[in-house]
Image (cartoon, rainbow over all chains, first blue to last red; front, side, top):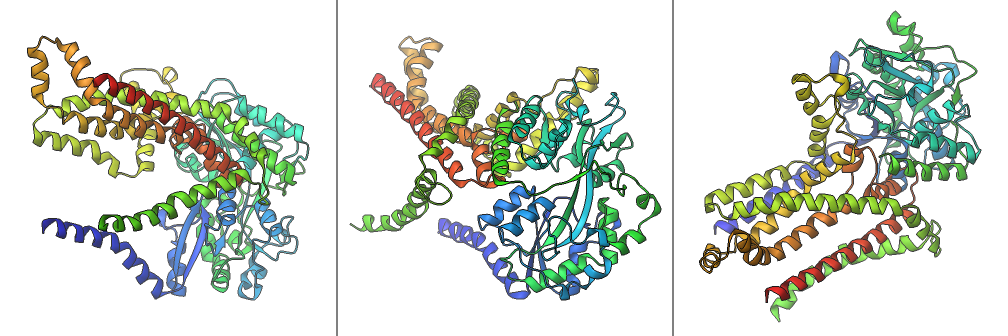
Length: 351
Length: 270
């Protein structure tokens, strides 16, 4: 008898998640948003909890999930694993997704804020020339972040990443496109190089040093001083610089400018709601909360005008475009495959 | 008759969740993206030969350390009072109730440059420049594996040891065995089935595990490479399937070798 009771209880426990799941789905429409870690204002530090605000205003439920890199997002969508309604990929990945028919054309009647708020220089960009599939979210550059107390050498450019010493204290992007971009730029090549030999050279360069490959661990390791030097996105560098006063940002002469934009996958079952979400993200207060909290550079005119002076005038965040800077373009297929193979080699040999 | 009928649901389960997925992997391993026969996938295995060897090396090391730690522990545990044995059993199990990723993250906190271990060294007067690096080394990977898989070594060994009656040990003592002989002639042979099970249960997951090596060692082992082929930008399920098929074969061969060793020991006991 005792056993029977125990078994029944165990079965009930197993059934609990099923019950709560079905209860939720009946209530309201659910919007699945996939974003990068630390890429939305979530209510900390007194800023707006953007997701909660949207849920409240539109009486819907938002299923907010994280992806670590563009590549993970891509393969999740390809394998049918991710049922997303809104995604925020980077420029080169948007180009790839458009080419492979993975994105839905947006109905801009539902996104009036795009026309009104987005600055003209962020419209009709290289990755989506007619701006049919994507709405800019943030942009920025890549640069070096170092701890001036602990990293005592003079910082002059990407070469610093291959410095001697500082074992295990130099971070590198844990995704192929960004890591290769750094190596290619150090070698003086284009980040969109179509020459296989240049990519192999860049791979050898990355293999020549044991880096600590990481993405979101950056937010612990740099301010926590367990790493002293890294290449990372300017917006994130700005936000960790607020936590640790010894951190300094340096932008090498050759760097890349990225644009991240909001898109709706072709498979989305809630396209209209997704467009409303995108429109919501372009509102002044929402954009302001995101921009102030994250430190990334906004393409939104209303938001930019409302920023505090010290952010607006910060050259790390809102620099003048230089001729030496590059955008990331979609790579030809042979280069894309080569990069992926080389990347796996690099990761396996990084002992 | 009745008992056989009870088996059917299980057989259906096995077919659906073991045989079919295996067949799918074999199919993907032998074809290319378009679905055509592609023996060229073996090239991925050739390129990854050294990664296989690395993974086997780490798995072997972890198994040896697990065995060295678990064997005396299991023996001591099996000689305790029953109530205390139960408590020890619990203590071995409790860490496994925690999420695997969390346990790895805990090790990162301990081993990091600025982690708990190095802070202790700093507190004892070591200078910051002289601090050793623990994280992102092969040693850290082995530590992570041993920590994660130790219960799988302790429990099977303990369960056979618990069945060795004290009277057997006393009898061998009475018949003139010294301490070492008791171990060599009585305890060791009787615990071999537990050891073999333990080794299999540690070696197999250690050889194919994900996450531990990249998080603690900063590099990929074969499980992570397979993971990357499925999840990373390569998005090459065929290469990933081929690698995992070969990994399965390698593990199968290792187990076969171990089982042969097992039977050999059995005949010695007989």
